[in-house]
Length: 262
Length: 238
Image (tube, rainbow over all chains, first blue to last red; front, side, top):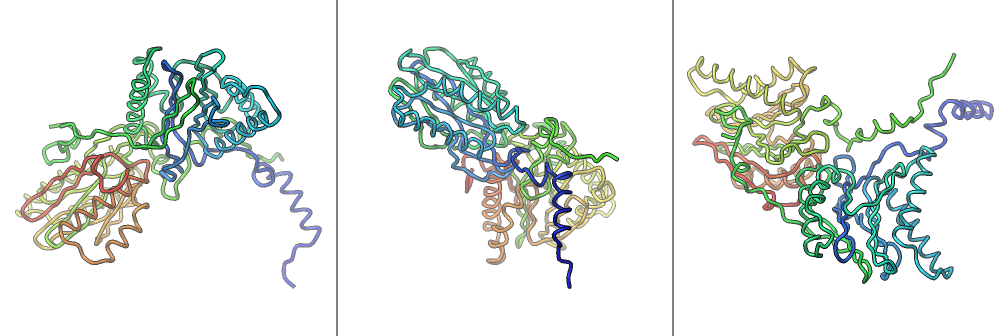
């Protein structure tokens, strides 16, 4: 006879696991660390409404694994007025998108006269993120919520992070963008920016992110919310510049120390 | 007696944030806090008549690109070069030492040093200081005896002569590509140069710690040809 488990030994093993190894073995509903992650999302209000921008990369640690990940999503149907953009754990972002779209659908099916405004979605999301934080099981994301309120004729731009911090502003950025891009956006922002200017400004910031963020890609999406509805662009590549004389010159020669420009 | 049950407190949750591996040695966690790494892709191929060396240009501290146009190809002697990966400071120090010893050695023996010697010097330094250094180096060059040759000196201080050498954090992504291309047969100068640019482009496309431009040097008996491939002209990607 071999070493087969008896009912008693199985019971003892189960009790042991339950008592001492619960966090690791039994309940795996805890978020420990992000695995597949998106990087920065940028947002700014302009003359006609509000715009969001993000690249289409989801990284797996340092591996640039998914290069066509859609991190800017419109909630509801074509005539809706709510956009969200998310960085952080992509599975949690997909969960949030499904949740918000489910809510929008249920509202419409149950005959709600108007759909939720972007501000209402932002408030709801803040409650969701804070509740998860209280259970020590956060949705590991930084979300930007944007939309145009047709009744008040005002654009909305707000952010919610993984622990439920929420605020609104004219320009916002998550992740690396908050370090590298917010200074640029704040410097160049005006309330009456044209669509072309706003887009060029966002592209400049995305370019800086591609240069300086190891987890960024030069394939990007821009989305806008205006009185005419929301529009999420298809991904496209942005130009980059590498040809300055200081870049081209070599530094590894025998005479130099490998560092200084000669 | 009390049992120490490991639970995920907020502090350990935050600490775990940066430790994910993509299935290969995590250079980021082995660097000391604030130390600059050259998460890198480096590659060298010997051909009949010389050697092609190529590298990307990204230097990263964590996820910030400290230098997007770095030069990772260092000259050790007239026809001997090395490619640097790992800690930028450790590699620069190693390069300086080997440069110094090689120049002395060339005077002692009255002839240009052999690539084998440069590789062995590098290996001695890395091996004897393996507990303090984080440097993966490829030494390549031309000498009249062995002609073009390439030596890989990885983290622990081994020294292996190879028909093609790749290194750095981006190298795992291109083992398949390089193996299948090399299986097609030996390369001449143009093919070797094209392969280096292609393989490094592919690695830069997938490795977050590699990127920017590709610098290549073709080393032959007559001299060194330096080439700069802009980030907008890469054969593949980004």
